[in-house]
Length: 250
Image (cartoon, rainbow, N blue to C red):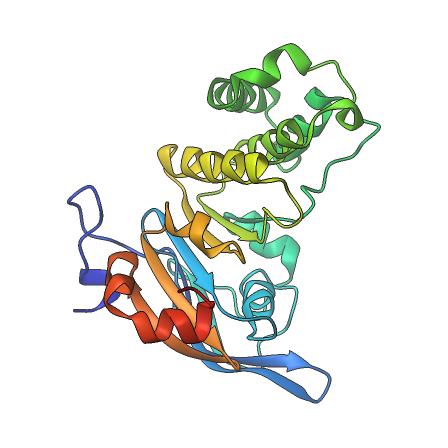
């Protein structure tokens, strides 16, 4: 069964939006990815692997931050392979940086509205802002507060809300729970599911495998720049050797 034919969790056909095919890339003369393929499946697509396996490099290849030496990246009918990050964002794909990427001296409202910087119609941005606040209601009373005054969990909400206002439908997340307390990790996992509930496909690179597996629909496992596993998250229960070898779980 191919990825495009595999059933989605809601009983509909899983139709990947972002597709990377046989990606080879790296830095300088050092090749990091050796022909990796990945697709954004309905729900949450998790990319796991040990440090140095090429996970973050794969995200950067998908969002245009690292040039693709060979292979291809497509979004629907659009070829993104040679595009820069700004063009990728304009196409409908957004990356949430590990630290949230907020401007600490701007208010919550100002940070959120930056998600609509490519939208010329102010009323459209207003509508999307309301949708983001409906998804993250704790932010409504914080709109006039500086971002630096927020808790870690609230800052992540602003980051996720700003991404929603961009109206992207594929989100690339590179280890959003890094350095967070266990409680905040749970908050991040909940926020990822909120994105999915609003129609997005999420590609999540995450070192906290146990937490991410709670929301994973499809999983890729990388090691040494190559794909070691590609399949539904439910299949991992039958892949004990892979889990132990590549994820360090017992």
